[in-house]
Length: 181
Image 1: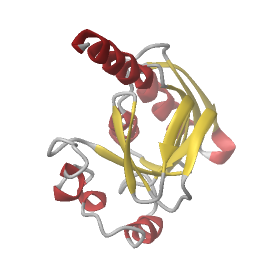
Image 2: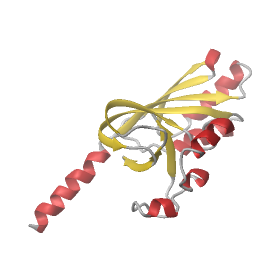
Image 3: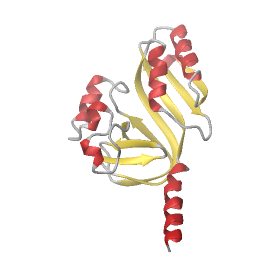
């Protein structure tokens, strides 16, 4: 009986491993010319899990395709843009999600990443889904303030799991990304 329970646990925990973000749309701020766009493009291509980048100079945006089966690090995208001398104005991640139940002000693990959903209604995410990162340094200060008002949990201020997250079984100091749909 223990073997059956163990196998069932492994199967169900493995289902989240199939969820993968395949692409992102990043809008940068502070660009003034094509050379700026080129600097960000080159910086993003240096990120190990990035397969390709297509820039839209007119809108200061970048369409990023991730390598298949690669581990995604959202902060690495932000760091690449900042290392090129610019800031992230917005970041949207797109992936194929299967039966991911989300609710307002709730933490959810998708793949290896932990997300805290804000300003949404309870729903089940299925198929190609796009989520928007609303953490500090991923949106304008005004928009960040709006999302801070949407929760009483302290993790939004630090981006790290705190007392508010430990009740949900998330280890202290785990990176938590605050997102909306």
